[in-house]
Image 1: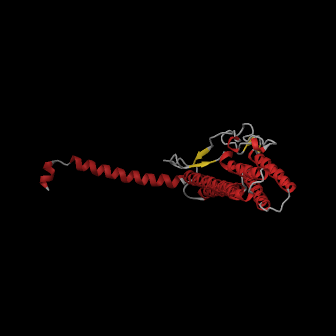
Image 2 (image 1 turned 120 degrees about the horizontal axis):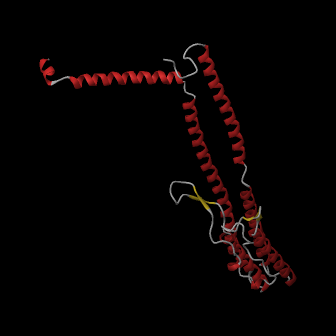
Image 3 (image 1 turned 90 degrees about the vertical axis):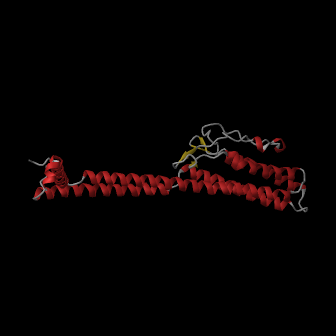
Length: 277
């Protein structure tokens, strides 16, 4: 009976077949390696949204650092009313700058708008008269955030978007408190604690952005690694020597047939035959 394989188990034909299979595996491995290198290089580059979010949060921290400097300088009683008025105007500009950061847009999407990425600017503009400005009502974006499931349980999720109010609200309030202190000739040193806490909010979120991005990259790498392993198993099975597989199958069938024959002989043995032994 002829083997279904086009390659004989012996001779130069089998060698050529094995050579072709090895060549295919080498080319596939080489191509996979090149693609993996390219994908790895891409993974090392932070996503644009992450870069912009990190940049905005970093600039927000610098705004609050400048506000702390102003609060410290204006705590001196030696400054003139004109200098205090100039500082008040600068703080107004800092408020507008922080609001603009909260409204950062990338590709038509608001990166601090929560789930409402495509909505209008999530933060209301700062009026000329800051005394009428309420930071607790400035945020009008979504109160929900988008997250993705990354594990076997519902609690294993990674947050993708950020609600602007959870990040910027204390910062806006701290800047308004400083503006009010300057406008009413109050104690600017008393605003330093609030400014420091607000800056911590931005710093914490900035660190969270990097940590969440790293976790997503890690999870993606795990999935891709498992996929590659599965593809290798399939490839090995497809590239198996068909002649050798058939030979092993024939040996197994022969052994099975011998076992069945012996079992049949035992079944035909009667009680009388056993008593004769």
